[in-house]
Each structure stands twice: as structure tokens, then as C-alpha cells.
Length: 98
Image 1 (tube, rainbow, N blue to C red):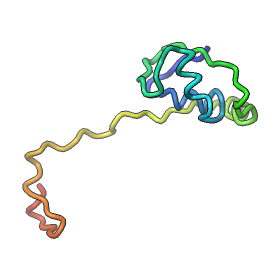
Image 2 (image 1 turned 90 degrees about the vertical axis):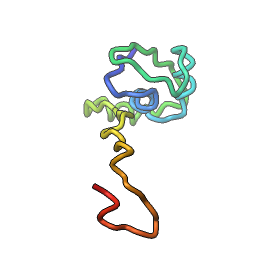
Image 3 (image 1 turned 60 degrees about the vertical axis):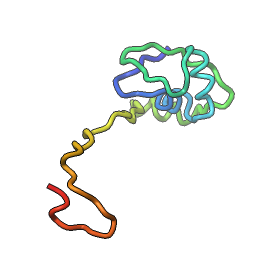
Image 4 (image 1 turned 120 degrees about the vertical axis):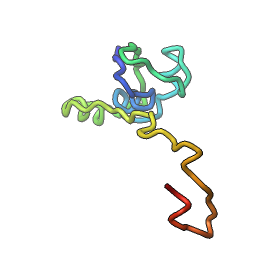
């Protein structure tokens, strides 16, 4: 069992625990998830045994205490629409943007 941390995805978990993406669908199915489901921080996941796992990479990651976390949240919100006066790929005037 592995406990997901904030920002981790199934892809992060499969790379961290299996060393490659080959087991992504198997990991999702084992836990009753789809590959795009968001994980909840603290969620426990069963990591299946796999013939495709890269055991050496997993050992290396664990020996260096590496936790894969790509955090799929946007770092900045999208700008408000009223911040953009107009845009044309042919003009880049300073007055186009605040």
C-alpha cells in the first residue's frame, strides 16, 4: 500500500512505485479508478506486483527518498477577460494589454 500525497496523480504513483508507466492501467484497475481520476491526499492505493516494473529504478528512487509529484494544478489563475482589450497576431501595441 502507498499513501498519496497532495498533488500526486496515478501517473506519479506508478512511476514512483513501479519505475515505468507500463503498469498505469493495472494500478488504476486494482484500485477501482480510471487513469485520469484525481487522488485525495492520504488516499491509500494498492500497488500490484508487475512483470513490467523497473525494479532497479524503484530501488534508486527509494534509496534517495524521492517522491514523484508533478502537481497537476495551475500555478496561476487565468487572467480576467476584461484585462485584454484586443488581440491581433499582427499587432503588439502596449495599449493592447494593461
